[in-house]
Image (tube, rainbow, N blue to C red; front, side, top):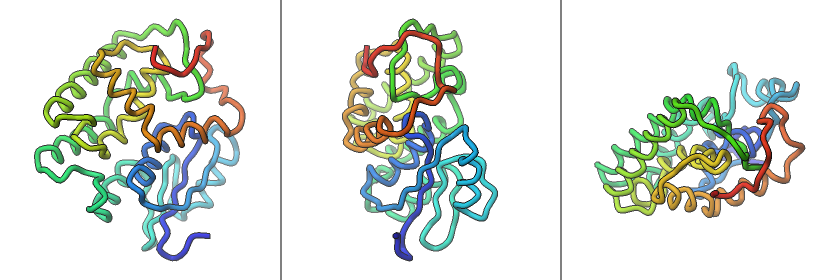
Length: 231
């Protein structure tokens, strides 16, 4: 059981919940300990587990209960809190320019790319053959390419703002969508995506997701399946 100084994190299906991935990476990738509770979306237990986790009204995951009794109900709130509470862990870059870029990237990812996120739900269990992206999805991908190219050039890589940071945490699920749906990507973008796929925290997360219960039928696309790999 967690002690009085333990963070407690509630997440949902690891293969499908993109915001849960962001919340968990914000802890695990920066070696911040937390006690994790998992629930399953689209079932009666989901609402019950949310209600049992915290006294505030909850609708979504991830949720964090802080050691001092606070409740964080959104992934960006979790990110800001941890960056402030653990300034020496590298969640945000130290340099002013890189830090400003990281904050901007996080904010745009949090509020943008609605077509890509809506048409291409995160699914770490399979790739799909024959998916045809809409014009709106392609426009989102163009914007992603612009952001990634500019950031990698400005800060020297290998990650968006130099070293791995919360900016990369927030783009991790988007990177996986390009893999799952075989979406077009430049060589530079493919290299960045490959780094996500081999990041130790992501590898651990995906393996744990594959060991969870059956596939969620809500994420079935009605397309032939292929391996989850860069095509």
